[in-house]
Length: 115
Image (cartoon, rainbow, N blue to C red; front, top):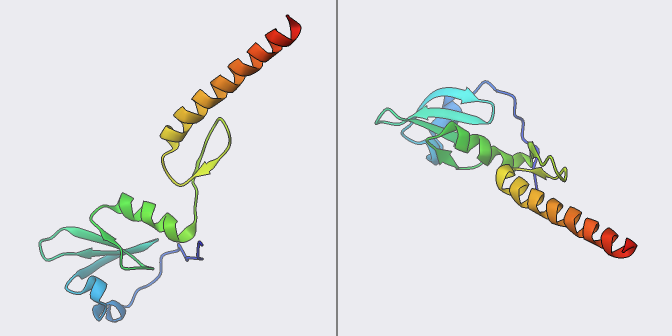
């Protein structure tokens, strides 16, 4: 069940996160709209979810992960109107094939009815 998550950037007190095990040993370098950015000891950036312990090296992965908390479905199929969290291209290919089969069956049915 989706929960309400504030996606607006907040001011974050560094003292609030210093004791948390999910970011222990990481230096806070920024706050994103859906999480925090830390710098690991090796210099790489770590993007951390502000709701759960999820961490990733890629900002795009954190954006996709945030949808698991918000329930956001930003992609809409142009054939059937279904809203999706991801995999729009795969869905549209399958949906287009299904729509083509339905249209073909409808044409064949009408030919049969009027023949």
